Image (cartoon, rainbow, N blue to C red; front, side, top):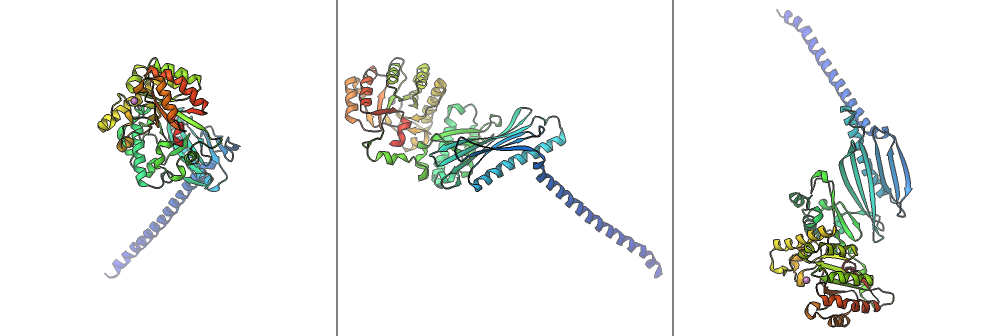
Length: 470
Ligand code: NI
């Protein structure tokens, strides 16, 4: 009785032993195989890139010290055309290279994935990366990369990447540095950007206001796509972040002079002090004056003023009322076509501090739209009627609010002689002179004013051009 179960157990134990050995073996094999699989796919990812043959060339750009690297695919099934800058800074180059390679890898991997599904539709896919270079102050370069992926000749994805480079320091700078690492400045800045997006007439059809609110919260990371171009700060928003994705990435520009109080000192407009100090008396220094005309356009007076300005090759700034632009869009267009600066002077010329915030924004936004509709161009500056404004209004209106330094009182005297006398009496360098292109007497006085000022050696510039010197 004792032996029987033992004898029966013998093969049982053997079986169990064999089974467990087999299990262990198969586990080991499975482990090895899966590891091998991992290793295989890993090497496939890293190998994917060299699998695509491409031609890499290097040439000079129009900017000294910046080379353009072109990387163009030789494989028509995986087409790409990539350009990126290379400079004398290894750190910069490796950051750019990293970005380019990551984009390329993601694209190639996507193509391989797609190929497994259906080989026919992927034929005309393509990746292009191009970049624009903007120089600022001889010290900074902005590189703006546009990355496009297309499928069957239709663009399906566009991405923007920007790099702002300080040539002297040899460093890439972010928006935090630009705004002096100041969270208060960030808040104000975020508000400006939000207001600009919501009031810019060219964006009204595209932007989605709820999205704008989210995309312009005061967080550094939301504003890290930027460039500096022509004394404007350009801010880029990714596809789908403030507008429907099919509208692509969206950018807005805000003038640096408007942002001046928020900027770190090294980015604030610098020539001011150098030129302002001696009062324009030093030899070889430029004398400038900005003529401004408010409350128009007017069908006769504005035209007469335009003729006179043309004769003296003088540029001026016209602060227009939206209601009058709507009435005389062709005159507004002529002002723009003659190369003058366009300013927003509200819709109905109210005393702004007496209005509600909503009414103020209504006055501003409707005029922005009227000017844009008439001229195809946005106003660049703002002037509150009667010069009546306050801190809260200046915070709300997302453009430079420009007053004046010489009031000709043309609206009061309506007398050409008195207008000229006012100018002669109060003239100083970098003056902003207030006139109105709705009084015949102003148009009549203008030749004498221009004659006097040009003989005194003044150059006639727009308000935006004179702001840095004030
Ligand atoms: Ni006015």
